[in-house]
Amino acid sequence: MNARPVAGVPILRLGDVLVTELLDELDDKAALAFTDELTQRIAAEDASGVLIDISRLEIIDSFVARTLMELTTMARLLGARVIVAGMLPPVAITLVELGLHLDGVETALNAERGMALLGWQQNRQLPEGAPSAALH
Amino acid sequence: MLRSTEQSPSSETAPRLDPRAGEPNSYPVRTEEDLLTARHAVRAATLALGFGIVDQTRIVTAASELVRNAYIHGGGGTLTLTLLEHPGAQGLRLVISDDGPGIHDAQEALTDGYTTGAGLGGAGRLMDDFRIDSAPGRGTTVTATRWTTP
Image (cartoon, rainbow over all chains, first blue to last red; front, side):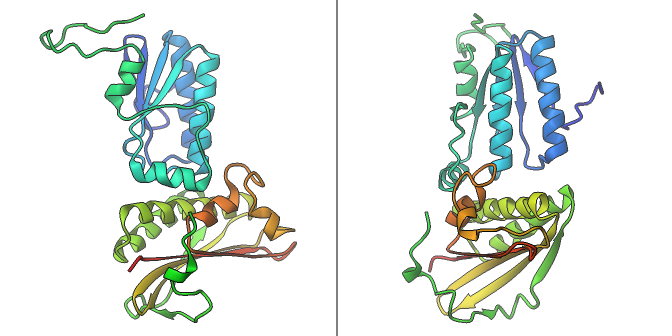
């Protein structure tokens, strides 16, 4: 496996959560590569959660919606919970009109709320850099 | 939602080309890269016409659905963009044609769930006017238009 992700999207690890994002340029090949890498990383790094930031996605068509639903299901089969965070309001409107409801996909308004759902908590008392995440 | 046709010019009245637009612009839909190029061209056209962000998103999403459909089911095709001008409204017309096997029953193809995903019907809901011309062995041409709200 390449050191640089084939899909061109970095996947970061924060504790037992993998953090990544989707970009508009997703095509079939990139989606497959991304799915491969993410599922491998979940297994290899014993991840219990995945945050997928989509705040830079300008559209979600049925192809991207299917990719998100498949990723969520695969991750769940591996025991990890996926949160899709940061959907733009016009994208939400268009998705519903298109008839796609992203069934089974958990969402959050933004990445911060998504991380909170995955057990991370912001602690304003602690100085910077302190490992304040409540992991469970 | 499909907007009511009363507030937008009917597709029956022959629209004339926006003089600024010149000839309609055509984009091949043969590769994955073409899908992105076509999408970017549609986005640029919606911006040029002054569509709001939600309408931009609707049109680009519908275009993405339709060109992918032509690429996967029609074996590739062509997207043609035309800027339309009517008194009081401007529009963007997408024509996506392919030489694929065609659709046996165009009406049935508009039903959600006919193809994977939301299908053609979903894309149709994002546009004001939407027509499918297809028959087995004759390929498929989809014409979809959205008008700016005055």
